[in-house]
Amino acid sequence: MTTPVRQPAPPAVGGRAPELCLPDQHGGMVRLSEAVADRHALLVFYPFAFSSICTGELLEIQLNIDEFVNDRVQVYGVSCDPPHALRAWAAHEGYRFPLLSDFWPHGEASRAYGVFDESSGMSVRGTFLVTLSMEVRWSLLHGPGEAREIGVLHEAVRDL
Image 1: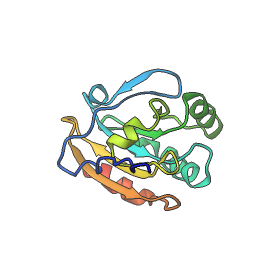
Image 2: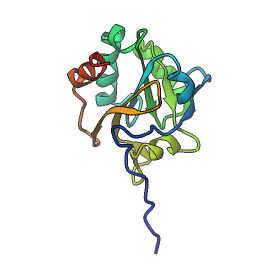
Image 3: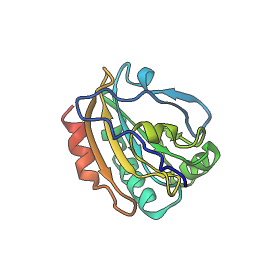
Image 4: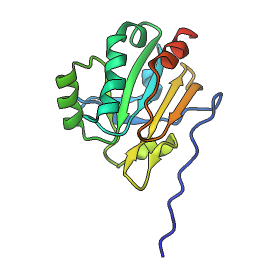
């Protein structure tokens, strides 16, 4: 009999954001503590590249790119897809923001943020706004098949 793997709960608003260091779709490494040195980070965890809900959500971000990538904030998409798949997806959809690969060790960052679904091997939809001091300022969680409303993300970054 196997024991279910317990993952940590998502970081609480006001708590410290877990460090992550992941490759982007071009192979460059992104370390969260370095990324927030000069602007806030909006981490958008999603299940899979090329899936319909995920594509719609990230296209909404791309259509509003000036609000999510500016001198105050940088958005990062995060999934368990390999970097090559993320590069192809970003090129196909025209995404102009980093897509981070949590592929190996599989789901390590997603687990740290409490959004990894062990039974499917994917992230659920978790969104975290991380401040310059590595504090979680705002978060939002949705399960598989539940799309995020882009308006809520707009509100979170407008309040910076």
